[in-house]
Length: 277
Image (cartoon, rainbow, N blue to C red; front, top):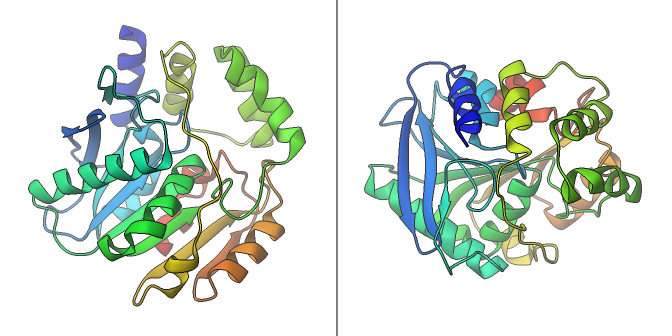
């Protein structure tokens, strides 16, 4: 996978300032975390969407790493530099929660102090929402960036478009799908090259399951929740997501970001995202 590693390093090379890479041990394998920002700043942990890798957060880091110690995580089993433990695949939501517990424990051992802000995009937001539903006491804030399968289901047309990429990914199929979903948005060239290389990455089937039960999270004292929705997302109806988020989490700040699509959000709306963190 030398081509993947070269593309991964190139994408990380676009980040502002120095990036510290660390491999944290967990029961499900080692987890690669790329960190930047002041060492003593409040911790911000970001989970990428499926297949996007931690490198997708580089543009967000330009703003967020001024006030946070930002930790961008490669999902175990997904494209990236996390390495699954043989015979210990993550197969369920409780496994994901246990894995993220170990990641946060590891970051604490590296000096992360104070309430954690946990954020995620797309599938990463689904993981973050499930974690917060059961571990609100470990978090100071939750930021869900165009979460999928949390407040509304996927549009059938989106699923049909995505199936060829999921069944037999190729660079051409991935580029065509991203071009369709983002409506031709200009995406970072280095990240696109990483997506090309990811097409042949030996990833495992991601964990799927029900929407998280957010009842306890809605009642958690002192928990701040922000939900950012992509107005032009093709994967779901932005208005429906926003309304459902407001109903499920009455105290949350729900905002629809105009003119941006789902997959482009961390790359082309990095400024608005960082401003709201």
